[in-house]
Image (cartoon, rainbow, N blue to C red):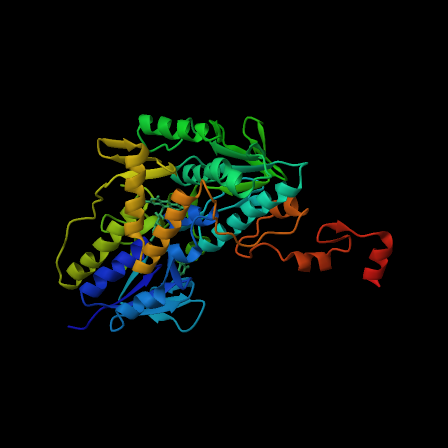
Length: 456
Ligand SMILES: Cc1cc2nc3c(=O)[nH]c(=O)nc-3n(C[C@H](O)[C@H](O)[C@H](O)COP(=O)(O)OP(=O)(O)OC[C@H]3O[C@@H](n4cnc5c(N)ncnc54)[C@H](O)[C@@H]3O)c2cc1C
């Protein structure tokens, strides 16, 4: 029997679990991803707040492929299309990749839902570059207000799901523990954290008791929680809610939802709500032969699942079994999701865990969250590094806030930088901007004479 060649597009939770299972089944696999690494998204908020290094939450896909070198080849490329007649995947780099079976596991991207101002002014923590930009902007703001007594810093986190709650909690920890230790000249009350949620409670999918716990824990740490009104628009220095309430905002961190990647619209696949690829009960793309979609990017309209790591991993394990059965001319049971529970952390010693009827809060929940997240990280080195860095954050932080800092812009221009969304580009180089700006060198106003000299 010839060995099937399976192409897996996307090396997240779903794609990698599929690859591991396909290897066990003896398949030849080509793994394609637009990035040379896989990202552990649940800990990106720690990168964005200086708790973890970007390398702690990412793992080289070439190293991963090298482990299975007889069976797995990695191709770093962005997929732009699929030729179903020729059974080939078209990428932005190199020849088309032929397949016997194709698994699409490309995840999703932040969804701004057309809210005015988001494209230019909202930052995210969805990818490693996004999180680094957000981190640099947070620290630029902090450095900015230490020398600019005229302005306070106001950060608005939009979205009261697990991602928004974790982000707001980490920022609150900076306010009450990090600032007094690392910025003794700064009054922490000048660092304001707002959390905006359109529905009437935080952490919607959790039990009411856990939602209330999370809300109270954030409020106790000084987060200003705004419930019941969606964001209408983001403007320079402010967020305007649907009820016309205005919240000052030098930095907006958007954690309010996701949607399918735009390029998927060109792939000739049926798309449902939120741009997710429609699949049947066996995770097969509707209307396409030998093509599957799994994880966040996929939805069975008759049984939609949450866009979380567990459904993605379970689909990743299931689809290779379906391929094996198809080749053997057998049938297997449709995919069924086993709910292993959900959790969210708020800050040190504060988290919520819900597994069936079991509901945990406080230190036990927080410890469960830490252990599980470390266990799920890929690679022993990453686990060790993350353990050390989280240990530093949780044990040393109150005495010496050793944050992992990146680039900050020069003052007093900090407010201008915070208004920009500079996705994937990092903080703009202040020197380059100064050259381009005849009115200022690193924020210093030039005299008329100097201006002429510069222009000459
Ligand atoms: C900040 C944040 C916090 C989260 N916290 C939690 C949590 O605490 N618990 C939880 O269960 N879930 C959490 N999630 C959700 C969880 O991370 C996702 O459900 C999970 O990553 C989905 O896995 P996936 O394999 O479907 O997609 P992803 O992990 O997103 O992987 C998709 C891969 O496809 C690649 N790709 C995309 N487009 C292309 C293309 N055109 N060509 C080639 N490659 C492409 C990407 O580079 C990426 O590597 C969080 C998500 C975020 C963003």
